[in-house]
Amino acid sequence: MPQLIVVNRAGDETPVDAREGASVMEAIRDNGFDELLAMCGGCCSCATCHVFVDEAWLAATGAPGEDENDLLDSSDHRSAHSRLSCQIVMSSALDGLRIVIAPED
View 1 (cartoon, rainbow, N blue to C red):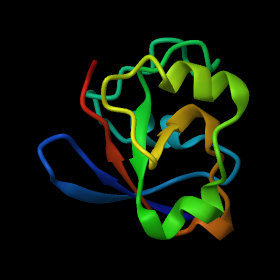
View 2: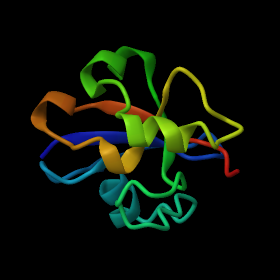
View 3: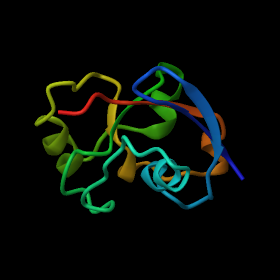
View 4: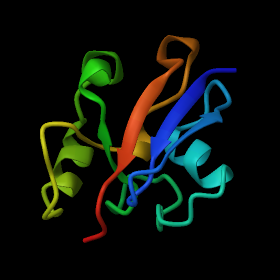
């Protein structure tokens, strides 16, 4: 089972197990991080699961798609590291992925 390293808004870092094939959003939510709202449930129709991908993992997680890119544009906190966590699927290749939960808009 791949591991995901989650940094919450307070800066606390917590490693969690994530099922292969689950989205990063599901792994965060399933491990009790309440600050990630994920209001649309992973349908890529809001930006409430916004995270920052650690620089070392940007190439492995890929670039945002067109819909994701449009939603990220609505955030005051968008950066070059921004992704919607519902659009990143966990796999063994992402074992050790480190993300930071973005500030709430």
